[in-house]
Length: 102
Image 1 (cartoon, rainbow, N blue to C red):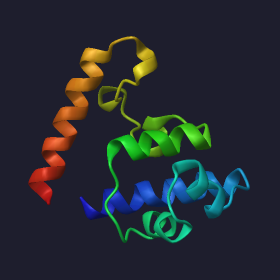
Image 2: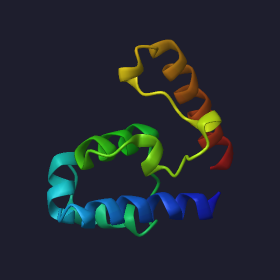
Image 3: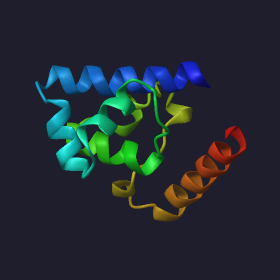
Image 4: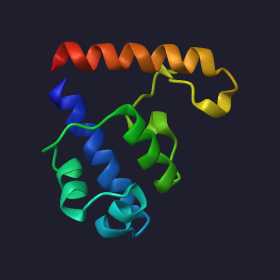
């Protein structure tokens, strides 16, 4: 799981750099300290699915692309899909997995 997590962080950084966005800008938009945002990109802190969704929104990138999902069977629906019940169920499952992994 650590490798997947690292890939997500690389995707965040690469997307940010591709759009010429600074870490300070990202931190400001997320309402966090720039030092804490840097920790996100360096895999030095945990990150929630909700925070990943915020980052995808700020960077204007597809959430599934940001987390590295390429198989259509793995695609995680977004709130815009109009199926909030499915979205909330998947979100709850991801939270449960996160808790188990510590």
